[in-house]
Length: 36
Image (cartoon, rainbow, N blue to C red):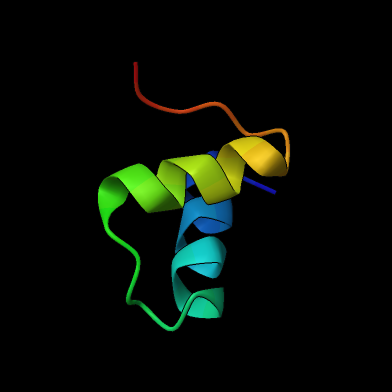
């Protein structure tokens, strides 16, 4: 699955309420490292 798609799915799964920092943590917990 492309990276952008994984980010969009995570954003939708969190009901689009997570900010960027919290979303990065959510993605990292699932093995997807983004940002710096």
